[in-house]
Length: 277
Image 1 (cartoon, rainbow, N blue to C red):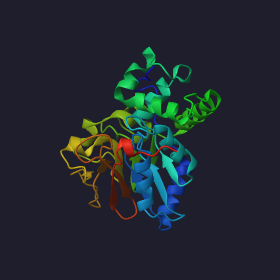
Image 2: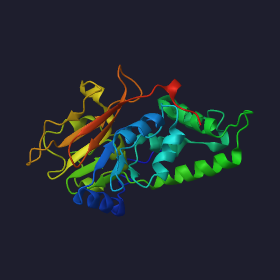
Image 3: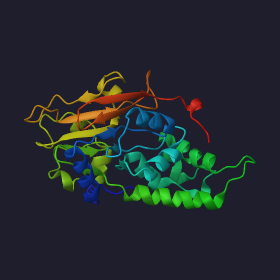
Image 4: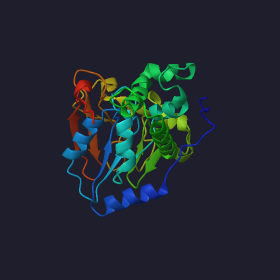
């Protein structure tokens, strides 16, 4: 069941925020990465190109899953790497509401909408991960893994608030008052009213988000979107970094450096070239 717009407030994690802010204060890099959508090898290649030091940190801006071939592996990478943090996206919300390990080899009525927007690929990634060379599914290990992954997803913050930035999947409403009181529905799903705001939703912080692809802003996939609305220090009020891993003429994954303002692009490794181990 979808939770109503005003029934659940977005969740923060102060410990994560303190660690990321300390990293920035001490001169380390914090990289925000746009929607991965199941492209595990692309994520790993991008991470490798960032030349992360032990003090650097990464924040995935939601939509780790769906559409691409290896969502199961993307979750494992994010969950097990202590340098990586994540916020919850709308596709993770759909996975939490729809994944059915008891019927993993069929599509139930509950899963129809999720499968239609990419959930079928996520479901298949778990089948692939736990099917042996004889075509048999290891049901016990599958259930353990699904339980751990869903519990981890359900614990993720909906947004991360730092001194100079807000990191969120979709954005904030300029009309709903206190940003820390806005609903999960807004933080994971909003588009136009946030993008088109003529004043900053946060006068002190740049909002870095995914969810809405650069193609939707009329940009090339080699670019990132920057709001024409500016803060008093001339920084853009919002920056969109979803380069659309799953479509367009030049699918890419983008990392944006909060410390320097630089961004790094990685062209998506095609589905048929994604490694199976």
